[in-house]
Length: 261
Image (cartoon, rainbow, N blue to C red):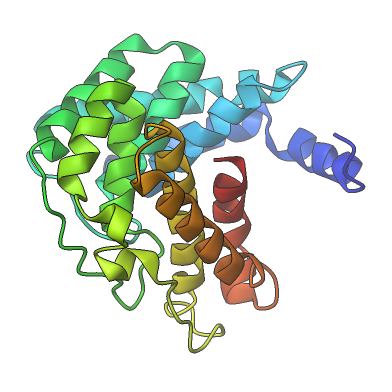
């Protein structure tokens, strides 16, 4: 609230987070051709925005967005029961990332049906996974398929159950293996929209490692390793949040996830 740009930000939100504009978005979603629009990445970020707005004073912005948020929550409820398989990618189609963000919304607004569906789906998709090979990164990843899966389960499982699962999923984490998960990605050209994704990968890994470490037992040898890796990835990514449009129009969102983890 004390940010020098706070007044401008509030004015921007006042102008754009209105019932009329939300109604326009709902009309677009109602088109027959829009059934899969922005699934699941855009769905998840809209719900994350709605969750954040619910935390702010006055809640005029939250009230304006609630019908749109409900529409996307309903889409998750319709989609997840028929989604037989997860999408294990490091880009926009990642189902683990979508479930992680949507679970935060469900908790914030008290949508217990959505929360239960997310937990059931995440368990069905990921709970049997063990010994992750972590064949990453791919050339345009901004998410770690391995770590975002772990972060998804961390959000929906009881802490004790998550710790048991994580010990099987990444049994050598305390020894910094697989090494790919502990090595910040190299970004050769930040003006290339796809290659610039790798700065986001560094930030999202920092987010996941920090969050995972917070849930591991204090005496778990993987905990300090996870925290150190989070710091390394954050240092690699944070300095490039601004500098080229290909990154700066979106990297701040992942930097914020990492800083608040």
